[in-house]
Image 1 (cartoon, one colour):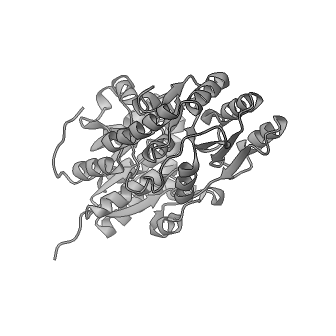
Image 2 (tube, one colour; image 1 turned 45 degrees about the vertical axis):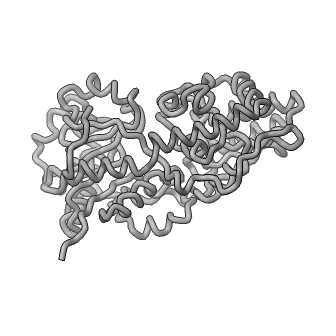
Image 3 (cartoon, helix red, strand yellow; image 1 turned 60 degrees about the vertical axis):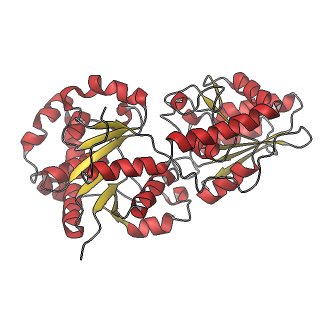
Amino acid sequence: MTTSPRIGYLIPEFPGQTHIFFWREIMALERMGIAVSLFSTRPPPKGLIAHKWSEEAMARTEYLGAVDAVSAAKTALSVAPTTYARDVLREGKELGRDIAMTSAAARLLWQSCRRQGVTHIHAHSCGRAALVAMLAQRMGGPSYSLTLHGPMSDYGPGQRLKWRHAKFATVITEKLNALLPAQLGADKPKRVFVQPMGVDPNVLTRDIPYQTYTGKEPLHLFSCARLNIVKGHQDLIDAVKTLRDKGIDVRLKIAGEDDDGGSGFRKVLEDKIAELDLGSAVTLLGAISAEEVRRNLLEAHLFVLASWHEPLGVAYMEAMSCEVPTIGTNAGGVPELIRHGIDGLLTEPQNPRALAAAIQLLATSPKDTMQLGKAGRARILDRFDCRKGAELIARESLDLSISKQI
């Protein structure tokens, strides 16, 4: 009797409000016949648990948990200090503290992998989760890989150490990949692949035809991202005010919650909505399920997200997959997804007037909106299907073959 190959997924604070693309990738792997064991550092705050699949995911996830100082000190000795000594000397006490804090979790991960027959761990992070995977491997555990989802500076110290021992790595954009040689030097793994996260176009599809804006009804905008200043929701609200002052009945719904579960940046946006007297025009939906996101997309005339910084943007992909004409910003890796004038429109970040102009342009150009919607879905089918990432991770984790390397 043969058993399915088994890999582990290590994701910080899983399942959070933005983690739908991880779940899609996991489901794709399991449809391929690969068993997946789920690990995380700790559960997310309750206010950020939004999806129908969240309870199933939490029930399947082994949380490695917070570790007391005594346990950390004992398990730190399980890894030869020569593994990380030069890195700590170079980077200082912050890295030393991170190693102490994660070493016990690494030991738990190693033990669980041995018990379950996990042969490889993929850390969907370059933060402390990557350090956990690295330490577990150095203790005698399975090989590991990692994914860089944004600027390396966002993921804390010890990057050379985390990447040095990885079997392979994936990076979500060409822009991030181009920085790796300078950031990692000789510690850059030999096998690094540009592989964006993706969506499931079989689920994110239309079952009702797209209806262009006629001017006889409200102009329905939808946006979806966590409530944080860098997502530019405040700029989109200003753009709505500009358009309404011109006599256009714009209605905006924003899905997402702040990292404090509703007590943080949401308050700033609520104050802004009240100050601009937009209470009847702008609705903050909070963290909603994937099914609710799709429903709102199908009801929208346009999807708009005005991020100041965006490594790539799964929310854009979801809208494009549903053939909703999409407006984004020329920020980070977004131009690798949305090609201006081909798959959607791009404006400069932090420019509410330009954003309002782009919205008005599409609202008054029904032929262009239909064309952009169809081109957007074609773009997702070609490049951003979640199965592509699952296939790469399966292939490289299990040594099924070696694809073209970067």
